Length: 287
Image (cartoon, rainbow, N blue to C red; front, side, top):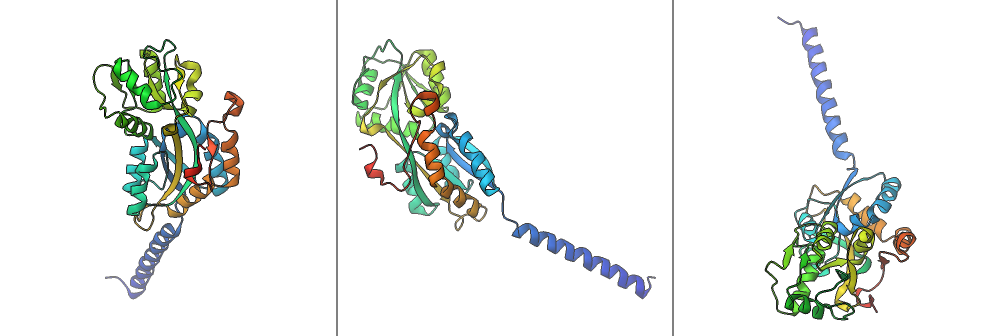
């Protein structure tokens, strides 16, 4: 039988252990999450832009960024499920429903570049120099020339489908190749097959030296490629790192980052891969 002193000692030990456990849990709950999950389009990764920006963000804030580079459709889906903290995408019409539903907040205009139609130098569909993307697509379709699609519900794929939609065409057949992959892989397939593809200019320029593809069609207003950053709503999704997501949003539209974007790529390609747009009106872009 235990003595009273033994019982008191055991009780003190138990209470101490319980108190330490409570303090540990409280400390863990109070500690801010240091990882920020960024869901973004492949073009921001393939061009190297994120490689230039993320180390600066991490150094300034102490956050560690986990980047998920997928098609914009997949990135938006992650946001709609609360499985990312912040999104950087380029499909405005698909982003707005997430704003309306409250899945995302703090949506800010960041930058733009443009889409181009790239294809083989021989240009079997004879689209080189055309001003209208829809006319180029019509000639490619009419001649059943090889066209390689992202086929992944990315922002680029959404833009491609928008152009086909203007022709009331649902492309299919052996001439129409669906890569189901990112822009870099899609460009490589188009190059290997001597086919056409729709691509953002930045990724094309970043990979141009390894591609047998020329810029054939550019400059149509429909080819404008606009990027927004947005915070996944922490009020709707309890596991979201709200402070981290907001910090990344504010970082992307900061004067420092906008200046970096304005010159990114100039040293290698002679022109920037993106144009900074923070604080601008979307309707004024491309004018």
